[in-house]
Length: 217
Ligand code: GRF
Image 1 (cartoon, rainbow, N blue to C red):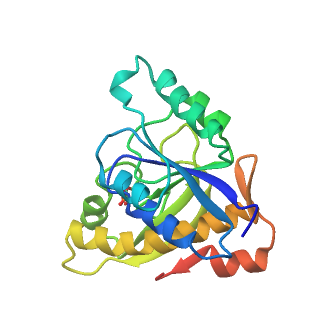
Image 2 (cartoon, rainbow, N blue to C red):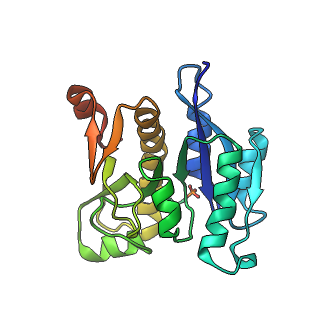
Image 3 (cartoon, rainbow, N blue to C red):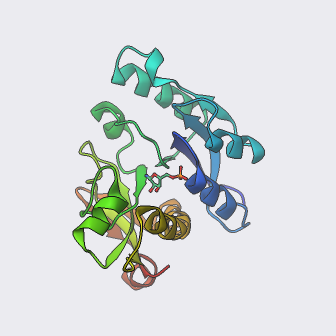
């Protein structure tokens, strides 16, 4: 497919969501292609996945920059040089500067392993189990300066079974993430979903009903 939307992916580790996006983009009708992967940590599995897929990789080690802004600036430069239109955070474990978030506003998305706005932050699955919630899930959202708080694009629901461990729930949720992220990126790349002020706007409401809420993906 020609004219595919160019996507940069930011990672810090395992990169299984990156892999899901790369695998989805192998379909000839998928509207986006991953054109660069940036990790703030060297040697991680996600970088190897990108290399295997023939995607240019960059390590931007946050510890070698004297400020959040200069670290983000280095990533911004790479993304621009690669002609990136959208940026996907996929297990990227750094908080981004307001300037970076503003620059990429409406074109910067993240996946989080809970049904936002519940359970923002870290140790999500342990906290979900402790809360007694019977349904959890995952969310793809636009990134805003406040952590895990941007307008929600798509969600999938995942059951929490009695006796679940955090690891079991994490694995079940991850399987849903791997379906949800490619679906959400498709909708973004097709401009079916856009950020309109502080809200998400959908071009075709009927289609949104079918694809953006995905119980038990
Ligand atoms: C995923 O659970 C994602 O939701 C969260 O970090 C994890 C990253 O996993 N933001 P992976 O690196 O994509 O395998």
